[in-house]
Amino acid sequence: MEDNRFDTEIDEIIRASMKLTDELAPELNDELKAALYRQENALRKQPATSTLSLWYLPMILNLITFIMLAAIALMVIGNVYLSYFAAGICFYIGLAGVLLTVVGVRRANLKEDITIRIEKRGVLT
Image (tube, rainbow, N blue to C red):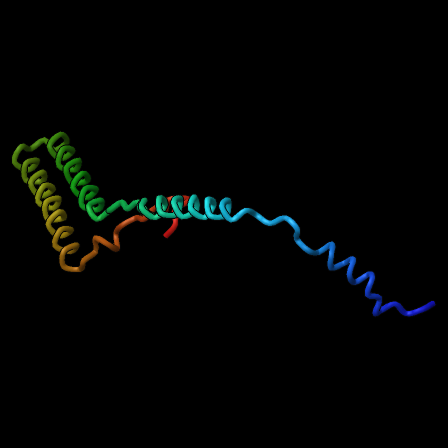
């Protein structure tokens, strides 16, 4: 048995089979590139994320809770003066919560931190 490591005929056959003979027309390539660039530009113009600010949510929940407590105090407590006093305290605490939330958000710049960002699918950043 002979050693055919340097058989040039087989090497030429392998190289010929590995060559690409089909080349795309330059016009088709340019059209595909232009379509791809148009699509990328259209996707870049769309905002990549939707933002939902939630800085007001604790304030609203606090206000709703204490308004409901004030309504319960007015309905349940039999003494008129005591029920108005309890309802007034509930309203006061609700308004104080609103004031504290607004001041805290402004002083600590929390609007960006209390924001939900939802990324859109298929959008380039």
